[in-house]
Length: 157
Image (cartoon, rainbow, N blue to C red; front, side, top):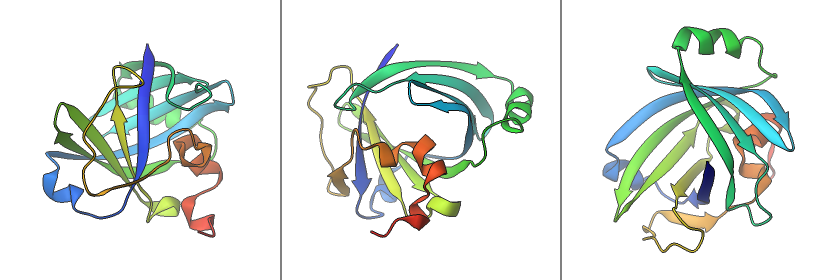
């Protein structure tokens, strides 16, 4: 139940020509305590509750537990979440043996595009496509729970 993930900014829309899936995601948080977050997410026609623990010091890994729930339950839980929500389109791009999940944010975070790749080991090698930009793994500003508190539109660059 440990998630190993690296995050990168995306510097062009080229990934869209390589994507084999695109879905709308709406999510909010029941809890954003520094030691754990509890997220409710609706992905098109699926819904999940996810608990994530505190990230490791380098930001590469953390505990993650996720369970699918009925969409009707997720919609009810969204009503009692902390203020704010994340809306984004998620694209899936296969590169070599890995899948990049690229999130194109909307609303208060419009203009922000982040690519994530999950790895089996922290030092695992992976191919980096040309549209991949600066690595932001471990930078708390780019965590979805933080983007609700301080949306991208408020950043001064």
